[in-house]
Image 1 (cartoon, helix red, strand yellow):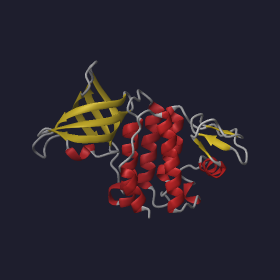
Image 2 (cartoon, rainbow, N blue to C red):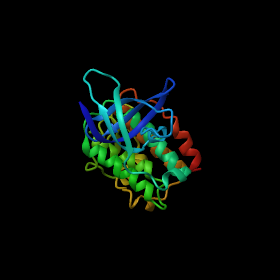
Image 3 (cartoon, helix red, strand yellow):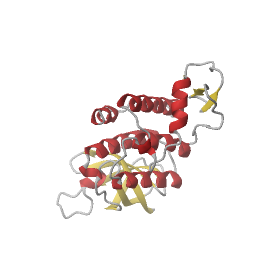
Image 4 (cartoon, one colour):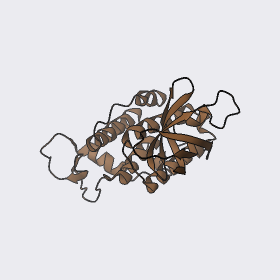
Length: 241
């Protein structure tokens, strides 16, 4: 069955002389792994540059049950980026988001609100003229809402700790080590109110930003099995130094 859908590229690599394997997150089908035959001439419809991380495409593929790699038939750029490819900072953020989603959405099925959130977020980043240093923090904080483990903020009181396993605030220390002390808990509770238009109001140092992303990744690792260390994180730290 031929399926036509919007899709966001998460990862791709060359396979043999003239083929590529591409992992995408699509509007209609969720996570899909594709194999594509690339033409040897520039006149072909499938182009290697289409499959860079976080590229937004419209794809058509042959969907078959019990087949791990679906055959990509066609692809076209749906929303070409304007400023993102020209900004080292935006590119570093984009590569981090792509690597994060590649692991976080390994088994994610059809989830149209999640797809729309990712699409809208990347388009916001592309047109932003400044004030986007906290983009990856805001993106990860709000992403958990679509994956089913958004923190419960209603139980916060001054001095409470945040239980990373339960995703909620308590007035006493839990019987395990996966929790945040009062200072980090207060910071997380405050930052969970960030959104893209207002995140520039939160003035964070490199050290503070690094601490927050470390906490967020710890939170995701507790809720997503076998979530690895991210190679792109170091590049992100260096660019914002």
